[in-house]
Image (cartoon, rainbow, N blue to C red):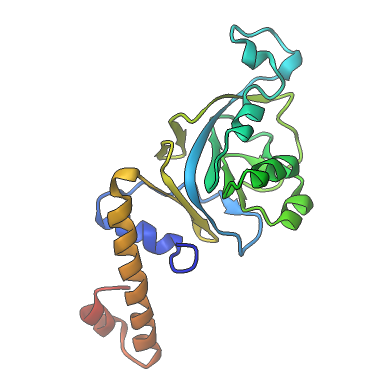
Length: 218
């Protein structure tokens, strides 16, 4: 997938299959243009909790800790999983260099967060695939906590479940449900191969309409 597919072709084939809301919001972009994330979702639910571990007591003792369940979520990452986090307001960083290092040590495939990331030079040096709304250093400790993980989350218009395939590149991040993953990937592979043929035909002078009539791809 990393070498032969791209987000546009995956999204296109799911559109044809009737799954038309599988892209995360367009604000979610890679920290570096060549970053690609491919792996299975390990969803993480974040919530605003101003005051952090020093704030008012919570019924669940885990939530009285700084960052809530975030450290446990990081330690629970498996090889080729993607830390994908949503639920809080976009007012602070949900990912950073130390988190990237911890996730990388566990063989994780990347991070996709519905908020900001920080420690950008460090993450870029590590080369850890990180997708976020942008760069912003304000920390989550005094503002938010992870309240659950390996759970179903909402991320924009998309419902993300544990084990969904996450694919992200410079054009966006798409979520492939488990029940259609084989069909989606087979169709995307065929379409990607077909688009190469269309490209060569148009490059050689074929008109757009003729190319569509011939290949059914554009």
